[in-house]
Length: 294
Image (cartoon, rainbow, N blue to C red):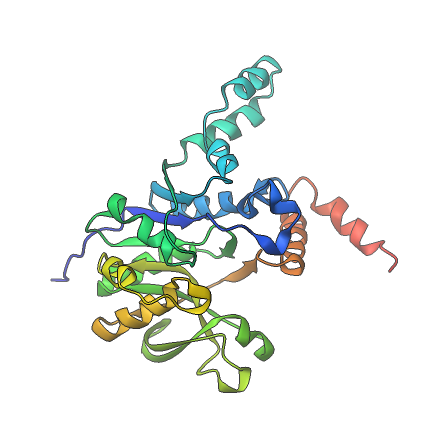
């Protein structure tokens, strides 16, 4: 009889960063709210979480992220106008967004670094394992990335990090690259994660980042972290310590396409690719791109 492990019922989305690479656009608009055709980046992340069976979502925000809360709230005046105008399709969509999940908002406190927002969720998470997904990047896969990770967790009961193969060798220096040994199929045990290695020194081409299933034991590790680069608390450094006390797995995501919206060029490529798949505009956009004279 297989062992039963605690269910993953909560997901954390860190969304408190300043998005300085997109200034001045992000001076007033959170980077997570940058549009991918007709939806903000963070909505794609929320939809992935919900499609994976989780409906309790904790967003770690800051004073400049109010529009994220507004986006997932009930827009009474907008609903009323859409209803009066007979715009049933648009009305159904704005209501769907508000009803997708149970949203909990926590304001970030503490030093900078991507481990801090995870720690800020501690009192909401309690003693349960939980998922973490960044609010400004997308992995498009079928089944959803997080669902694939949950299936690995349910089999092994161990922390799981999503893994994506980096095709271009020169791009290895942009990611945390995992040194791994095979467990089975697309599941690996992580022996080490090398942050942004020189391409010739990378231990593999498997980037371990973007989504995590973590145990509550990660919280005291973060609390006792020595600040790293820039005096900040970094989640990869906490995971390095977790690996020393517990087996951590990588799930190489099947049928996956990674979309990085964290820099201008990658963001524009993402918008174009999603536009070419959008049923309302794909044909006209394709013709426009073909007709460009550069």
